[in-house]
Length: 93
Length: 381
Image 1 (spheres, rainbow over the protein chains, first blue to last red):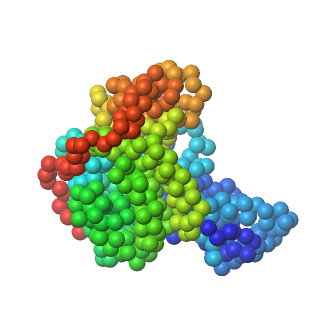
Image 2: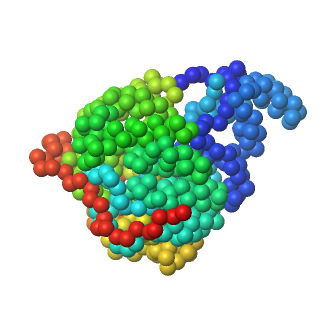
Image 3: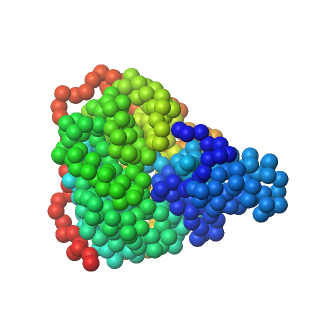
């Protein structure tokens, strides 16, 4: 599998859908693999996966939006997307 | 059932059982005759649910908290109203998955399903080449499945493939994986036969030897690192495990199955448990059946457990294993799944494994038969 890094451009894989759980109100990623509940950070990250922006750019934008240090966010964003990539929920280009 | 509502989500809400996935077995009819089919050998009697009845079931399921609907069977494409049912499920906010043999999936049907909002297509294959595959399916199906896979991809679906593994195809894994990759699948599920329904009947023909299972596991482990762009999932035959599978993530806890004639079951094979009576959506609401019915409450939680499960710390992980397996192999569904080496009945499983090591019987396996012809609902739209 192609390694994921800060220059990767993530997008949701075909057949993966972001939706709100009507019972809990939480955002969930639905796929043939099952149900993956997203916390607020993961939700913001997934919403940024447009297949155009790199992970570096996504981290920078989120750092600005949440007024957080970009170094720490870079780690979080990469770790979150690496997990989603590992389970086939996102693809990278 | 492998896969399903796994991962981090559902178990964070342990307060109350909540169904996350609905398996809709919309017909028992099928053009294939696979000897490991998990459908019941004794089909329930009655007429298939009609379109309006399925619509109600789907909407009630969504209201209960279900997030995913799997359309299965039998062969779900035999229902002319499949796209309509998918559209109802999507309108109710469900993720929709088609679990199919592929027979009947041409370009027109695939694009109609895509337009109806179908999220995912999983096509079964029996082997990596036609002669073996068609022998297993008891029908000339392999070439049609290849065409179906192409139609699914061209309609824009990510293709999932499922190959059930057993004694007669598990040694061909290299060929199988290469074949499925050549179809452009992004996901391959290699699930060993689980012994229920027709598979239980044919177990002596299907159960692989220990050597076969070990070789397969090693091959898949290597293949997972070698293959690009295709996720591979491998499910062991649980007889070779030392601990039982957490069947259905617990009885009446995460899953609902509604069968072709409206029976509501905690798992697709629960009708194999003697003495258990299942409710029907024609008589009761899904909500009542989920919360109140005897069948769903019977093995929910831990009160039903006997030793060694009752005092075992692992009961929170495996829920005592599979009730159907306990009933089939020990005669009582309340017993610990005999796959568990802590079960006093483990010797039953060991004896079966020993026979598997001694060779396959010379008799032929029994191909799955369709249910007796019953009137199917009028075509919709």
